[in-house]
Image (tube, one colour):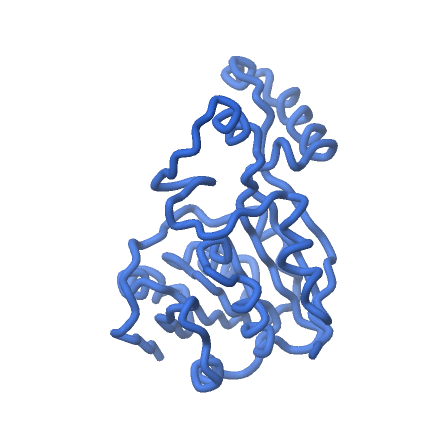
Length: 237
């Protein structure tokens, strides 16, 4: 069933190849997923392939995305998360979920923590939340700041739609630690070192891949372009 609230403002469709670091954090055995900010359904498409039988409900802010994402979702709802989520809206999503997925959506909200808390009321105790946000202190953005440039863009870390900014270090302290009952299980960076011409040498792939892994392990707040978090919900007040 598809529910469309005509009163919500339209947003441009968000379509990509799916987020592999986010998908890698989804635990085996989850049966029912709420994909908050589902975009064109790219993560849902991959989840259906890797988790057979999974049921996925999507939330989007764009009616255009409804048509794009519909084949990969069991239900989809158009909502404006910044306007708050009523009890009726939460109940319309159906039975409680095993996992909440927030892939690059919370940074677009005025009060991401409030939205996260409301969505957690629809998560089973013992269920999981996977959250991905960009790291504003990735080395490319630092270089822009050092040169005195702070210009919003149409896409990326400085996307003009971003309302809140996080780093690798603050993502968990801002989005997990303040919520009673939500426990951090894992956090993974994704990014790359500034290796320049080395990346154009095909035979150099094993070397630069190893350097990327080492750099992300030692200095994730410098080299990660985004971070993904896995947390477990034990219930809370």
